[in-house]
Image (cartoon, rainbow, N blue to C red):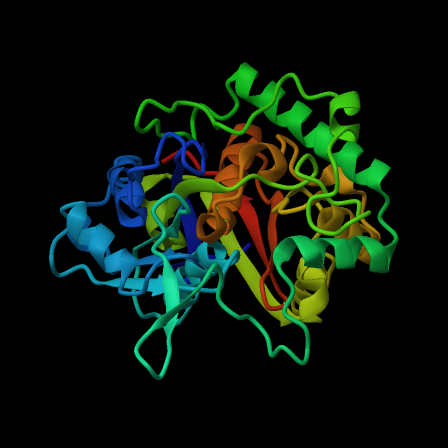
Length: 388
C-alpha cells in the first residue's frame, strides 16, 4: 500500500457502476453507444463528493463505433461542463480496461486528479463499415482487420477453435465451464449480489443473457458454431451484447480526505501474442505483470473476460491456475460481452466484490484477451477507509 507522502499520485477507484448487459437487438436496440454512458456519469458522480466541473477528463473505450469521439459526445450529452474534455480508446475487447488504466497513469504522472473512465458498446446500433474502391463503390465488411493476412487474422470464433485445438481443451471441459458460469451468475443475480453495481435502463434491471434453465444435456446438443467438427459452440461462447460501465478514478489523498474506500491501482501490463491464438493473450500480459511487480498476482479476486470457455481454460492451463477462481459470480458467457465495455465491467465487478468483503489489502485482478493477439492484466488492492 502506498505511503502517505505518495497519496497525491496514487490512483484509486472510489465509485463504479454498470448497466445490466443487454442482448444485441434487445433492450438497448435503439440506444447509441454514447447514450449508454450518459446515465452512468451521474450515478458514479452521485457516489462521491465531487462536482462535475472537477472532472479532468472523460476516457471511454469503444470497439465497434464509427469513429469520432464517443467520450466527448457522451460527456456533452450528459450535461457535463463544456470545459470537461473526452478521449475515446480502442484496444478492442480491452478498451474499457485500458481507459481505466490510462486514467490511473495520468494520475501517477500528476496530469490530473479526477477521471470518469470506462467503456461503452452498442452492437445493436454499430454503423455499417466499408472500404472505398477506386471507382467510388463500397466494399462492406463486418469487422476490421487486426493482423497481416500472412500472419493469420482469424475471426474470434475460429481463433477460439485454434486455441482449443492447440492447447487440448476438450468440448466437455468447455461445456462444464460454461454451465458453471451460468450457475454462478444466476445465483448471484437471484441473491441480489449485482444490485449495488447495476443501474437499470430502458426497463432492464438484470443482465439479459442469464439462462437459469441451461443444463449439461442442453449444452451437449449445441452444434459446432465456427468450424465443422469443432468444439466451440453457441453454448460455450459469449452472446452478442450491448452495455456500458463507468468508474471514478481519483487520488488516494482525496479518498482519505473524504473517508472513502476503493480499489488502489497497483500496476498493469499489456502484451502481444500470436494473433491466431488471440484468446490466450491474457496469459502473456499476466506473466509480464508478474515480472513488473515481482510476485504472482493470482491471490484474491480475479475477473477474466469469458469470450469463449476454450480461451479461459487454455489461459488457466498456461498459467497453471485453477479456472474455478475466475469470475466468482459468473462471467461473460452468462452475463454477456459488450466488447469495448467488458474490461470496465470487470473492474466494476471487482469493486463490488471487494467492497462487500471489505478486506484491506485484498488483491483484485482484471484480465482480458484482445483481437490481434494481445492481453491486458491490471492489479488493484482494496483500500478500506479509516474512521475520520
